[in-house]
Length: 440
Image 1 (tube, rainbow, N blue to C red):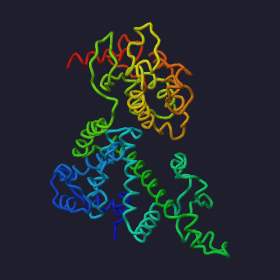
Image 2 (cartoon, rainbow, N blue to C red; image 1 turned 180 degrees about the horizontal axis):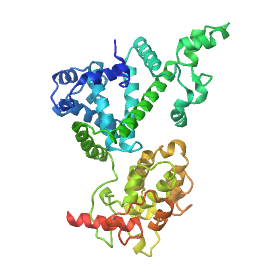
Image 3 (tube, helix red, strand yellow; image 1 turned 180 degrees about the vertical axis):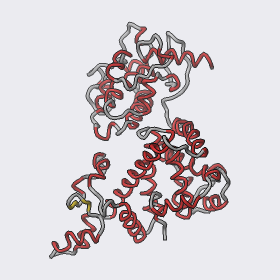
C-alpha cells in the first residue's frame, strides 16, 4: 500500500517520519538505500553518475533541478528523474520536502520566483504520482488525504479561491452545500442520494464530481498547505535559530536556482560595449539597475501592471535593441533594428513574460489583456502578438525616467552606488555594463 506521505508530506504520517529522521548533520552523508532505489527504479535513465542523488542533500537539489527543467527545458527527459515517482523513496522524499521548505523559508520571500517554483512543483509532483497509481489505490489515498485535510469536518469553497481565480477550476464545477464542497461519495449520497429516482446516484456522483476534479483540488490544497507551512517556518525563524545544515542549504539554493534557470534564458549574455556609446547586444542581468532587477524577480499586486508594461517593456526593448536612444536624434522603430523580429520574439518578450509570471499573483492569470498592452508599448498596436503589418499603429514607448519610477513605483526604486547621478535606468544599465566589461 502506498503511504499517505508519498502524496502529502504534511500528513500526520509525514510529520512522524520527520520526528524519526534524527540528525540533520547527516544530510550530506551518502545513503546506500537511496542510491540503490534510484538505480533500480523502472524506466530510470542512468547515462552518467551525476544523475544519481547520493545523499538527502543531493536529492534536495535534484528536486529543484527537476522543477526547473520540467518548466523550462524543451528537451526535458522524464526518464532522468523517474525516481521521483518511486514510492519506495517515500521516507527520503518526505524528509527532503521538509528540509527544502525550511531552507526556502529562511532564504526567499513568500512571493518570490524561487518559493513559487517549489510550491508549484509540489502540485505537479502530486498529480504525476497519482497518475502512476492504480484507480483503486488512487481513490483510496485521495479520500484518506482529503479526510485528513478537512477543517472542522469539511472543505470550504473559499479555501479554493486561488485555483478558482486562476480559471483552472470553475465554481460552477463544484457541488457546494452550505459553503462546504461535496467531494466524497458518502457526502454526495447523504446530501443528494434521495433526490435521484430515475437514475443511479452512484453514477451521478461520478458524473458530477469525478476523479479529475478531486485530484486537481487535492493537488491545489497541498500547494496551499505547503505555502502556509513555509510562512509558518519564516515566522518561526525570526525567533528560533535554524539548524546550520538548513542555513547552509538555503545559501547554496540562493546561487543554485538562478544559475539553473539562466541555462534556459536565451536573452541573457555578458557582452561588450563602451559606456556613452553602448552597442546593442545580449542583455547582461548583472548590469540591471535595482528597479529592473526587482521587477524581473517579481512584483506584488498593486504595482504589477506599471512595472511590467511601462517600466520593463520599454527598458528591455531599448537596452537590447537601441541603448543609445537618449544620445541620438534619430527616431527608430523596432523593425529598423530587428527586421525579422526574431530578437523581439525570442529574447525581449520571453524576458518580459517571465517577469510577469514571477509577479504575485502572476500578471496574466487575472489580467491577460496586459499582453496586448505590452505589444502596444513596443509599437505594434493593440494586438495579442507582434506583426510587422501592425507596426506604427502605436508608438514604441521610451524608458521611464528615475523620477517617474520614484513617483509611480517607489517600492521598486532602491538606489545603489550605480544609480548616483543617473536619471534613467537605461543610462544606469549602460554605465554598469561598461564597468563590468572593463573588468573582464
